[in-house]
Amino acid sequence: MEANAQTQSKSEVHWEVQPVTPARFDDFASVVNSTGREKHCWCLSHRLGAKEIERLGGGNRAEAMRALSSEPIAPGVVAYRDSVPVGWCSISPRSQIPLLERSKLIRPVDGVKVWSIICVVVRSGYRRQGVSTAMLEGAVQYAKGLGAPAVEAYPVDPEGRMDLTMAFVGTRKMFERVGFEVVGSTDAVASRMPRLIMRNDLCAN
Image 1 (cartoon, rainbow, N blue to C red):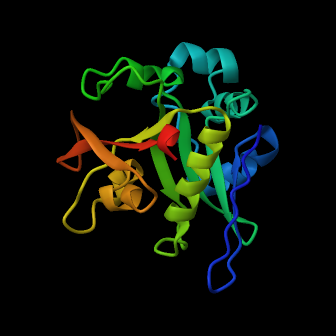
Image 2: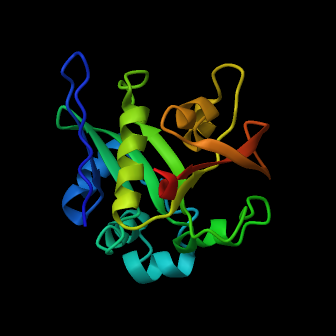
């Protein structure tokens, strides 16, 4: 099942958010690794260990991620602005993110089978243009369409702009704009700031 979240802004910008698939893998790559770096995370650090990367991609992280994109539940969604891929959001059931499941720093708040957002990326040149809001709205709708009871994120709450190297965790304001609320705290930090637990309860929507 695919979600197709589309909105029109006053300037007639067309947004579309779609789950990553093998057919959309190059669009995903253009957002997360636009320079084609050979050694790149490919958003796998929380998902796969070395053995799984070897099994799925012959040791190649990009190919392992391509294999994950063919699964029934995609590892995330790609946001398009006027048909140009401009954002990536890693979202899936928490149970499918092993490093998060085992984390002693980001522990579950309760027994709800949440989906988790662990990475948000806005393509260079498109920041501060509403990408994150449209992308997160689409990501939540994708999860809701597949029966997610709630979606969680683990951002920080900076007073000003944060270090871009850790921007993938997102900010409190970013998630509040799309209906998330703080429901707990963690022992994890990013850019020396504590990470929060924020949740969008889909059963209440």
